[in-house]
Length: 467
Ligand code: NAD
Image (cartoon, rainbow, N blue to C red; front, side, top):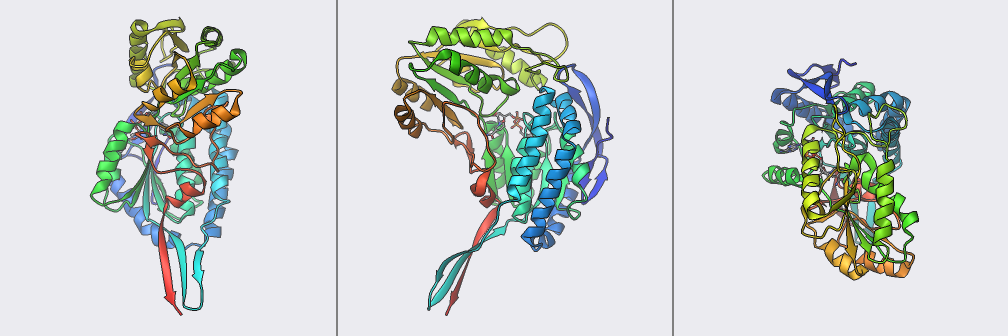
């Protein structure tokens, strides 16, 4: 496997140091990964800065062609990238290959967008127009749950707008991103796209770097705060996609047999390591017992194992820290509620935890109030939608949420009053590159995806001409 290299100024190079990347299914080292030094980060930023003027002035049609070529390349290598992603991230192979195809589709989507000049006034006395200009060097910082798709939220939008990029994947999942860097490096001029890997120590340096004009960050709320603080001195732009504690509110007219599999998938996909997973299910008392039974049945039937094995639905937790954190949530849940499925970590190597359903648990319990980011779902009994909405909105987070009901009028009404960036009705966690995505409250600042997401990689410029 490998060798893996950093991409700096159009050249593949070794890191000034190395680090092991561990396979979370085996806990064995998977590959040796280059680890960039601060000096290499500085060279990556300098290369991006030097490449910026020419890339900014490159016609948008040419930038679009570059994105399409990257999409083609990623798509053509999706099976290989998916295999690598499974080994470093843990998710089942089918999901990992799907993620690689998804990343290609996001590049392709951004290639369809434009940044047209908007004419506000074209009268006898003046012409006023608004243009969108790129910002300069963009730092793109990605977490470990969806390394490829979350990279593809950022890189194609930044490049299409005419920015240059320094991309930094998470320390535990850098390999598939470095492989993409190797595959696409000749599609754009040297310095336009740089990729470095770190041991969780260069994100702050990238954030504070005086020559970086924008940080596009996905990760935890805690780190998001540091990013905002680090960006403050230079008043650089930030887009922050942070943690969540999405509530699914299930009203009494719902058929548990029909809704349970959808809620189960939205809670446990990627072993629950999804920013917009269902992290709390508020279920009406009239269907509460049946819903708990259905969810427990699905959890008991789930196939957990190494992602490369056929038929596996859920892989391990991605890293030891997260594994131990989720085990801690389960221990607390034993005291705060009743575990009706899972609650165990299979013997042997690998950070595996079985899908876990906790019932008879209330707000105020840690599993309900905090973000578990793992395969443990609390199911909370509610009296009505209003009661549940108040509890859902009491969270510090506001990323996503969902309302489940056959009474669509009621569902719309509740949805409109939910304090989150996205509210789904009778589904949860659907993402589409053309639909803007962002969090309320401590779940984020700004928007990714869609035209609004592209606009965040630009600065508006007004030209106001006398006639
Ligand atoms: P994290 O915040 O620990 O790390 C994310 C990235 O930030 C990594 O690349 C890391 O190396 C880097 N980083 C670390 N310290 C930094 C610093 N001081 N300055 C800048 N960057 C730094 O998050 P994680 O544990 O990798 O990811 C899990 C979290 O991400 C969860 O809370 C989850 O909800 C959230 N998440 C949010 C979204 C979203 O779109 N809102 C999507 C996926 C994950």
